[in-house]
Image 1 (cartoon, rainbow, N blue to C red):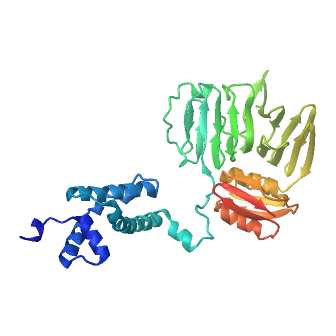
Image 2 (cartoon, rainbow, N blue to C red; image 1 turned 60 degrees about the vertical axis):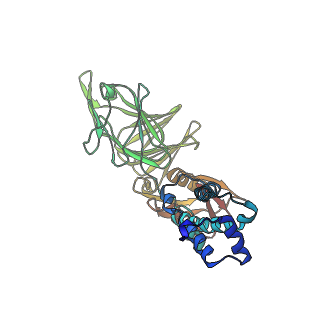
Image 3 (cartoon, rainbow, N blue to C red; image 1 turned 90 degrees about the horizontal axis):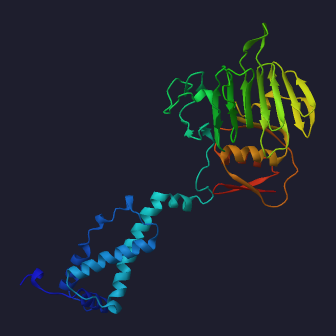
Length: 386
């Protein structure tokens, strides 16, 4: 009678092996039974398990199935130490594989590093039409072009949309936190939207006597010069930007407007040409190099570094003698993170220029070099500490 013809009880062999009384033949049979499990059936690369409890249940069911195939009734009190040892060994392999795949090993080796690098914002925006339809604009495209008869991307590629009469209706282009986008309007005006910003174009933008749009957030404008005829007199067609009860009448070309809802004032910075800022009954006209700050019906005009005002458009953060709170507001918008303060907020002023194309950790490290502030990143939350 060969070994296959003999009948063995796996539980009895396990018990005898523990006691040191198992024969070499019994040990060989047990090892053959144990090695017969097809561990390739457990595909860890695509497993749907979310925790080790489920894995343990699966492994136990496989071993139990093996016991059933051998037509034995396991004696749990005697077999448990062997089952536990076998399952533990397999679970250690599973744990090692999952740890490697998820990056746990690298975290154990270098615990000071953050789990996930928070990357800077990118091209991202939505287009909302007057019928309420919202289209996610392509992040691989530089921007959106709106002309008198069509909608397309700036590179000339089309947009999958029923565009019938689309440009004759009201439309809104909006960027989220961590998004920026360029828009070319029907009159040729170019607009760069910063993070968490939007422009709302009035219906028939080009054919109206005045070119009007509403702004929320921050945008840089290069307004096209368009002439019109009024009672036979040739004159510049007005371009008007409204922000709540404030307005900016464009008389020239290049300027930046900052009007976030969580910031009290509206700031208009002129680089080229001329603009007139109106807040209630107060009006101020700017010349290049000036910035108007409108708040509660008052408008203050100051000479400023215009490069600082448009640093965001050029891919940078740039600050001069600025408190940490407004700096962190800009960082929160661009990296789409939450900022909280732990302890008293530093009164120190900060200055410098940092690339907006770097990971968040690099920007915060540069600010920490001053010694006046420290940061801790937890997920998508940035904790600011003295």
